[in-house]
Amino acid sequence: MTAEADLFRTLADPTRRAVFERLGEGEMSVSDLHSGFSVSQPAISQHLAALKAAGLVSERRAGRNAYYRLRPEGLAPLAGWVDRYRTFWPERIGKLKELLKDMDQ
Amino acid sequence: MTAEADLFRTLADPTRRAVFERLGEGEMSVSDLHSGFSVSQPAISQHLAALKAAGLVSERRAGRNAYYRLRPEGLAPLAGWVDRYRTFWPERIGKLKELLKDMDQ
DNA sequence: CGAACCCATAAGCACGTACTTATGTATCGC
DNA sequence: GCGATACATAAGTACGTGCTTATGGGTTCG
Image (cartoon, rainbow over the protein chains, first blue to last red):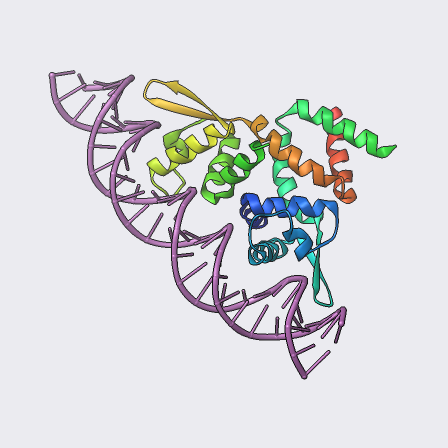
């Protein structure tokens, strides 16, 4: 119920959403993640903490490094929310169907 | 590109998202919408203006009334963003497939 | 014509929050 | 062991924004 709320609030910030998107490339340490962003390292850590609290990211410690990994299943409540409105909206369904067909092969 | 950003920012506020969801019941005037919310009428108007600017809602004027209607296609960029991560995420695909099958009949 | 209603805009305020710098805690290399 | 590196937390600040009350423009009805 409040899961969508947390997800919307967490992903609303552009920088934090960019961090999430960047993790789509694969597991990454904080410093790896930090390079390429114009904000400070603590800012990155704070965004990662928020993403983790929202279930969008998982953490793995190894020595002095902390590796973060995408957790796409965390998007499920958000996806469910969007799907409720997708039924209004036939044209886009077709494209999704194509996507699913491709994935079946 | 910035379309998702606007959608995330617009839908991040719980009250505004509740207004959007309530419009799922069908076209409604501002005062109809206002009843049932604990915020003032100007607050509702401000949320509607934001939703309209994001393309999530359309307006129809009739005399002294303003009727607002859901525009689910406005969610397309957000849905597209979510879909990019849905591919990571096989179990949920199955349910979607069922939904599509039901809709084919 | 005037009063009541519908809705939007203006102005001001209060609060959340994303950032910064500063500091703390481990861990690695020499 | 010591300095350097990796990351997290603390504290403080600045800014966006969602709310309020006040007001204005426009429409309907008596």
